[in-house]
Length: 268
Ligand code: OAD
Image (cartoon, rainbow, N blue to C red):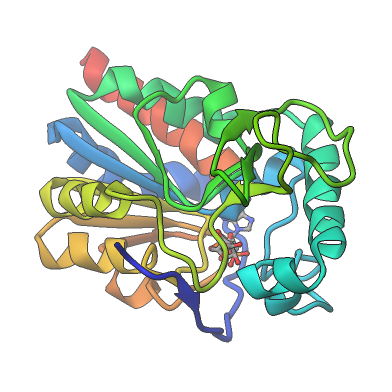
């Protein structure tokens, strides 16, 4: 069982790189991937940014101008469930209007490219699943689940109809099926992620600021275990200096390019 918590960090912007440099930058990663069978991809909100889903800590992000403690903690829900549900209903409504982007699609296709490919995500938006990912561990739950606060009954929803959803089984107040700050991650999920990070030969860290633990510890753990860890993120993070390679380019551009290089390498 692992407790979730967060810290903040100041980030620096890299200059955008020219597109023709991208394939050169990706070459070392492609070379490592070509030899690898055990590959892990760790994702955060940035992988969904090009679908139009706001991240949390970027400018205009979900936490800009508000405190996560008021919207994403069990205490906030006990104090004001209507306010918390408004926040999650508005996120659900926005998600109904978006689609997976090329980054989600490449990650989904990577499952069949490598012998042993896994995806560990902090995202709750369901876009990886929509893109076709199956080997997926969701560290922070799923925004499309309502879970009863009385009996724990869960149901999957696809709409944003009810302002304060009630349990189908006991009539109790339901809450979003996500992990809030101060809560435990789902049983066994983080333990499995640790195992995958320790075993992986290559790890892709895509679109996360790497500040929310325990998720943020996985990339470092993989690096310590000897994995080649590549960070794909237009902005530097607290993890950047520990990465084997940093690709400072949006995931929706860099992952399709990486896939192209791999196609060429494997057709040789
Ligand atoms: P953050 O908002 O903290 O970080 C998003 C990261 O994505 C940043 O480092 C951006 O630079 C990067 N980014 C933005 N656009 C990108 C793109 N097109 N391609 C690649 N990277 C891009 O989001 P997370 O790290 O996911 O938890 O946040 C972790 C957790 O904090 C979330 O799961 C959530 C949040 O509070 C809870 O709500 C419990």
